[in-house]
Length: 153
Image (cartoon, rainbow, N blue to C red; front, top):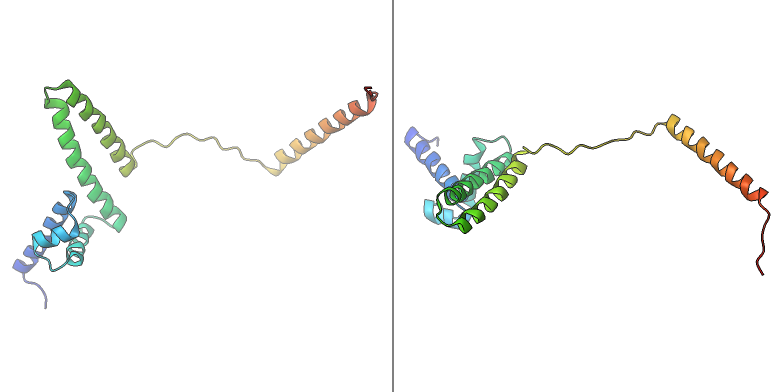
């Protein structure tokens, strides 16, 4: 039986509430109890269904969830860093803020990739190097053959 407009609005509200509580760190059991689902599986399904509306895959959904958590943490740390009267608390908050910013950058792929040098070895380069090494070995063998052997007694 299809949902009417009121039922659909209530369902979407419950999905949004599930997402909000998951962002806050609640377990699916706690969310089920709070929102009124019969079990944690139902709460998880509602949470994922709600997230799916804003993301294209489960990885994107998880990234959105984790991003929302990072934003909440950032807000808390930022307030402490800018409003605390204790320099010690401010310093700790700044250090934590740097960690949150670094993690957020990795989460969204904002860090520039490191530069890498790639050397391509072609057959021509390999042949030249082999000829050079063979010539060097011949020179060393010639020097070894030309030197008289010394015997120590």
